[in-house]
Length: 321
Image (cartoon, rainbow, N blue to C red; front, top):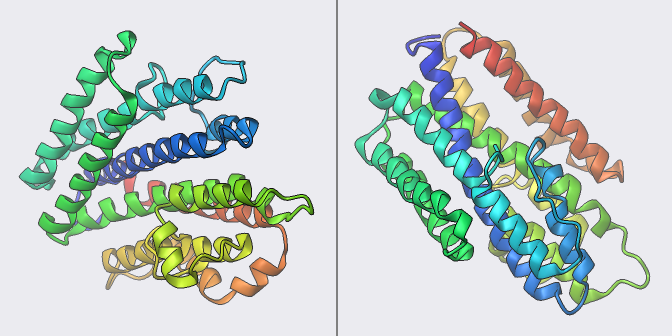
């Protein structure tokens, strides 16, 4: 550790992860609700499968105890569970609460704007959590509000943080969470869309592909590059390898690489730096080789293993006291 204590670095890294995770879950819930509306009359079972796959994308989360097939009931149950569900450590409420706990532990490293926005977001969400039992609030309104508030937190980080070690660890935490979760979305949502069955229902197919892009905040960016062509193979390439869209795996890894290079400048490359650099080089130079494997799920599984190793090495190198 160059200047920060390992405990402070760990807290701010995880604060970044929790802030990013809360934004991702909110976006996932919004996409799920939109997809439920689109597919309700076309394929309600596919709408239900979107919700039931959330445990694959958020391993360790707790799904609602619902076995019925009524798409509206399934949708509402999952929104409540992943928004404010008690005992669900991967809910929006849990993520914001933990971000606040980490922020309080490293208050001296944060700007007033960032700390106050995180605190205000949690205080309002805590009111929602306490009233969740009565279900008097509209969950979609809460999701929309929290989404705006988290974007405000991210904006305050970008506009007010000095670019020091705290900012570097915060950036690495946010980028790791975005990259890791994005890979799980691609792994579990896209492969089935690459199969191109002969009897494919085009409206359903396009709705699901758009859903993947929306989940990763990339639909408009994709359209600016490729227009209305929703070819799943092209979508996969865009979400994994495009260096310009901020939620692609390559873009996130690139920002992590920049951060750790600055952090380790003049000290020699560490094991974490080597791992990140090696993985970044693969995504830059082996795109065609990886896509030629013709098994997107296997490719994503391998990349998930690699980025998980990056997190483990970072934790051992910088956060172990």
